[in-house]
Length: 581
Image (tube, rainbow, N blue to C red):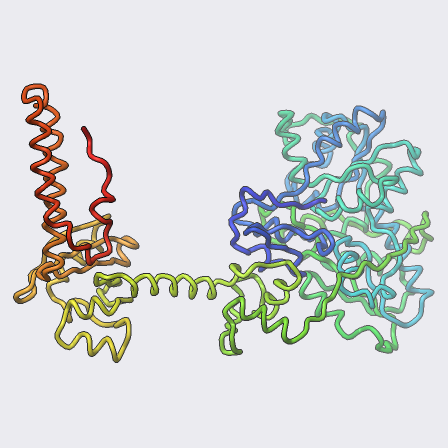
């Protein structure tokens, strides 16, 4: 498979799913994997992945092995090489490729010229109707998987690359090895499907890596008279990597063709363009040049992003020229058959869909935010993915947020102490009723009217808490403990940082309550035991059995407070960690 996921690096951000034009991504165990039966190999997921978890298959090993196995291995170099290496003389690049071990270098654009001649002939003989180009393998995959009803509109011709492979085999024998180098990932799919024509497909990224590994600087390579394209240089076929370049090439070779030419690039744009065409009676000959990459092959998924599209087009078009024999017949038979391979389409019962939505926390239409955070445009599309095993409930950002808030709120409500969370303005985010009861006064009544006191000014309802909470915002603290006097009561306050500078929390206990005082004394007694046991151990050698007696006396100090259980839910005294001896 040309594209795969490195699971260890996938961060379940769903950016690949969000960007994929056909949603060919399956999320399992928080890892987003490409689905081979749905993918059209446009490479969008590879380019948008922020951590590089989407990888392109490395075929450099196959290329090296091919060079060892065959005496003659020819490079089929994509015409977009002029945009990839804008200031490099072709002869230097040819010499660098020969240094890697290739016997010769040829332009894929020669195959494009054969395709243009075949298209011009087919359009002249075909009559009125709609014709789709088949130069882009990604577009062909899109049609055969997602628009099977439009397969009859495909020209039924090989791609320029496969046409070039046939041309090279005719020129140098069927035993010649052929390695394509260009910006397209889908060409690897063509190599897999047509091993009789194409041995290996590499990307420009692969080529740069190979040159670096060998220490070859293509910009400083010496050149000789033999460093030229074989069997000849390309002319009008060099226009193919630009948007509309194929149409220009066909038009230059079919002067007598009465056809309307249109170009659409980018998957969303071309899908919108071909919508509603099946079944329509088109009175004229309409040829659509369809390109998966916006702006043409110069913007392929493995092309350099060093400059803008206009400069790339300029580099390519400045080296193209008119054909020497514009009206010639195609030199090869390029007929190809595209078989349908439709992506399964499921029909879900309303009850099943409603159940899936409920798993996402969507109990009613108002709950369906359609925010797109999961990667799907609508909540119902994610629900369908759940039913088809392509998604997981935790992909829904709003659902997980609500779930986390519900858990946090339940925990806060169940705590026996007063708990409050506040933001950087000391506005209350959430608190439990025990917090309101601890503050006293009108606060419990306000809590009943507005549970949680969300938005209330903490500094206003409890001015004594302003200073410690402000300190918790200004500096990160695990636990800032202090006692606060409010009227005739003393409150034990523990402040902790949730988000530095943004969210701070506090736990409040009234230590003037009898039960709390008893718990506090117990804790202090236990602290005395812990501190004194160490001292007892140090003097044990001098006092002998008096050490054990001292420890027993200290233990009795604590036992008098152990009759009543802790009201704060702490551990029972007899569950304390064993003392050191």
